[in-house]
Length: 445
Image 1 (cartoon, rainbow, N blue to C red):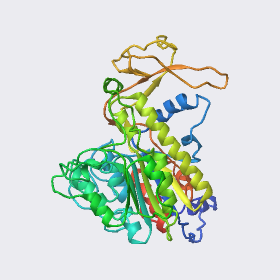
Image 2 (cartoon, rainbow, N blue to C red; image 1 turned 90 degrees about the vertical axis):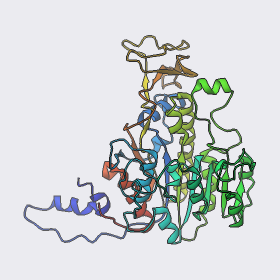
Image 3 (cartoon, helix red, strand yellow; image 1 turned 60 degrees about the vertical axis):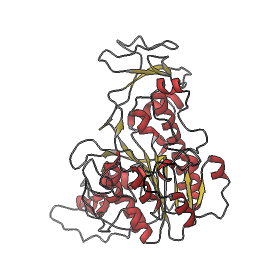
Image 4 (cartoon, rainbow, N blue to C red; image 1 turned 180 degrees about the vertical axis):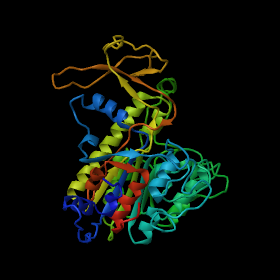
């Protein structure tokens, strides 16, 4: 099938194939695309192998995750303009603008400003706001994380954390929840989670209050929001709402994977959806579980799987929302594979993987083998299969960086069947599907 039929009308191609040789079909009259709300969820760095490991631990080899229950899927193709492996900031920019950019891009193409594929002078989030829709951004990482920030912030350098946070705070989105308090406050000013780090003297929290936002800092404060609150800004940690270090480093410092006072991505998203559902002309919610990526990039298997479980809980929330609100598209994908995770079960040449025993620190090719508490510790054990058996396994890592692993686009709800019809979806097609659902467009391929 011509991949462009995903967005230009597959019915015409099917009709042509059914006609006798030489016959000319009448020009099809495509129906106006159905429009509604969009939830785009980005479990950053979580590829098919990560989901497989999570399934083993949470549900067993015969069980199913919330992610597994999304009915439509396609293989995600995520190369950049100048490379094969997607980056978090380049991938997010492509999702936000529908333009394939250089890997080192944050809301731009390298250092060059861009228009979105629709021709709008700004991202899909900016266009949604300009056309009267409410926008929410939710992230378990800091406010400067590109998975959400690149939808409203453009800068020449990803390292411009103070600038990115300012641009996000000035964006005008209806709801924003993340960490990163240090970049909201001037150096020397003490916040709820720690001291500020801005060098320009700006106090972005005072600015946000002046613009009518309710500011909340903890799970309890989020739960206690007034029921009529419609502009909410959550700041739930000094930096990320997780501690992205190796298992061994966290054990030495006595730190958990996640900040205990911070809400989970599902808890943040639930409140965001409650608010955005009041939008008279519909909404766009962009949510990201950033821990999936960061824990993979330090080869922390336990942290990666905890982040994945949180992402899966959010997918369950989104599935239930779509079931109750069928005029909503929910789609999800990563843009790369963090750390190149692989599961190794006992088999030929792998008899050292036994229940209750420590793993060797390295596989035969030198790859580190993670157990439940880090490299060389007790083997992982799956949840029971249908026969009640639990299976030991190891998690091997191929790298500390992102790789072009197996990524799927999955979805449910309005227009989600177009995902399955495509079979494969480029990163730019994520934008096309969101734009079609929000605005009824058929953008060129």
